[in-house]
Figure (cartoon, one colour):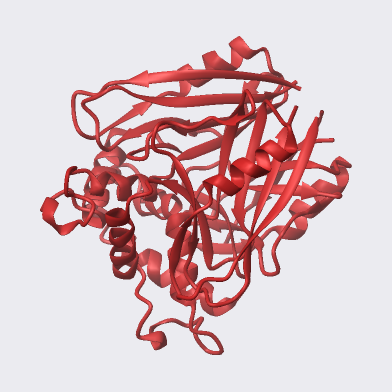
Length: 138
Length: 138
Length: 138
């Protein structure tokens, strides 16, 4: 069994942003040389997400609106967590979107359906944060 | 390390449907001959889900009602994504339900608690779509 | 490839409770002797969750309030599932929080960011329930 590890770093200019990281995950896979196995891609922070969905700007606006409805950022005082921080909503938004994805590797490629793309979902940005790519297989 | 790959295909008559796919995943596991490892089961489409819960018809009605409350199908115009399509709600419903499950394999069997069953959750059906089963182990 | 399996048992005094199980998962990892690989940690029950977030009491109160808003426990009669049971809300809460986490193992340790902690989320407690830890790697 082989394994490969890589960190991807991000620093968004806005509090919230969705970034397509599929090319970076593919690069890590090619660097690993692994042909058959699994790749785990996870946010290493608890106010960010890694998820798979469509790279379509309308849908991304819908995510923003929908997550703000489910777990509004403001007023900050509505959350017990917001004493020294103001990011309780980011913890909840990340919960809805998920921490991680596991993707099959087949014949050296990400084994994806037609529209699957991997995203980093930042919900409390404006600082350096990272994603872990861990690949195991042969 | 051994690996095994299988696709499961679905074409539902209704827009939304929950289908118990545990027997199909078990069959794939037996075909693989893998005794110890992990199985990844994921929707290959971004408007469908694979999740684990109870095979109980009342609960499935509750899921339908609850998901319609969290991310209503109509009016279609409420979503930016719905310009050429009408399935933004399906992307959001799948987000709540999750893309994938990872299940342990122990002694050649799915290592499940008493009520765990694997479901395909279709949220934008009436066409051919598929699920990936990828097994790694020994 | 090596594999290791361990069950963690819980019996909460309250219907809902969040328990930090990071030390127990670390112990299982050390027992396994695995240096590089993946660990799957999943609830073996469909009214409980395993998830990763912050060990901060304010946030845990926010989770309680938020999940009660998204999927209220009462009135029990609002759910089709609640004929012989009263735990439909627990199935839905677990759906939001997720069944499982997959964590990378690097150099014999859980490969975590600065604040990541693994929690058992009980949503229908007051009885014995368990979590599966399955580790594969080398």
